[in-house]
Amino acid sequence: MIKPFKRNSVQIIHRIQNIGRWPIKLGCWAMSLMDREGFVVIPIKAEKVDIEGLLPDRHFSIWPYTSLEDKRIKFNEEYIYVMKDSKIEKPLKIGTMANPTWAAYIMENMAFVKEFSKIEGEYPDFGCNVEVYTNANILEFETLVPLKTLEPDASIEHIEIWKILEIEKLEPTKSDIKNKLEPYLTKY
Image (cartoon, rainbow, N blue to C red):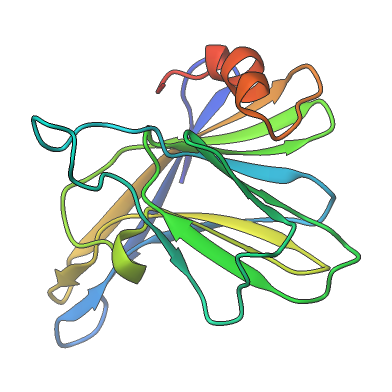
C-alpha cells in the first residue's frame, strides 16, 4: 500500500498475512532493486550501551560468498558503503543494524532514501535491519523487521518512508554524507 506522506515523500506499507492453517515464524523484507551504477550508504553511528562505553555497539553480517577485501565495500566509523560495479560478476552481501534507521541509494545527483523504525525484537541474519546484495547486474537493498510468529489470519507490517532527493553529487565519504545528504533526512 502506498500513501502520500510529506512533501517529496511517500509511505510504503508492506504487509504479510498468514492465510494458512498453522502459525508461521516470519518477517517482512522490503527489497528495492537498482540496475545502474551507484552506491548504498548505511549509517552505523556509535552509541554507548554501557556507562563506560566498553561494550560493542555495532555489528555486521556477511554471507559466505562475500570477501571483506572486495573493493565494492567501504567502511568508516559512521557508515558502510556498498558500490554497484557492472564489471564485477562475483556477488556480495552484507547486513547490519542501521543507526539511525535509514539507508540510501546514491546515483549521480539523486538519492533514493528509505527511512524506517527500529522495532524491538529478534531480527533475522544475526540482527540486521538493513541488507545489501550486489553483483554485476543489480544492487538490491532491503530493510527488515523482527521475526514474529503469526497465527492464522494474523498479519505483520513494515512501514518505510521513501524519498527521492535531487542533491549535489556525492562520493562515499563521511563528509559528503553528513553535509550533503543528512540535512534532508528526518531521522538522523
